[in-house]
Image 1 (tube, rainbow, N blue to C red):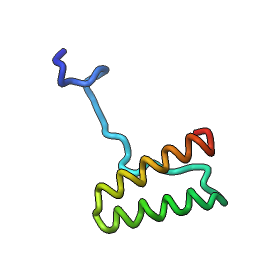
Image 2: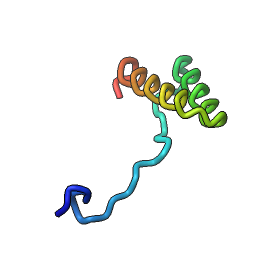
Image 3: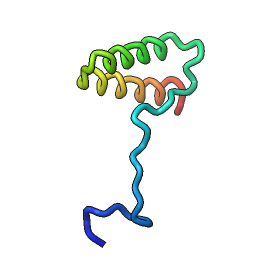
Length: 66
């Protein structure tokens, strides 16, 4: 096996571009962060998109335990 090959059966699939965000029902900060993410994607602002995704992951971990 070469270093550039992923482990396993040789088949590799990329994860979904935008994983669904769960546990956001009725959470104001979640709604705001998702709106920021959508706006960044719409504006094609990759820096803002990455920032929003990081903020969503941190918020989900800290507030929702996921």
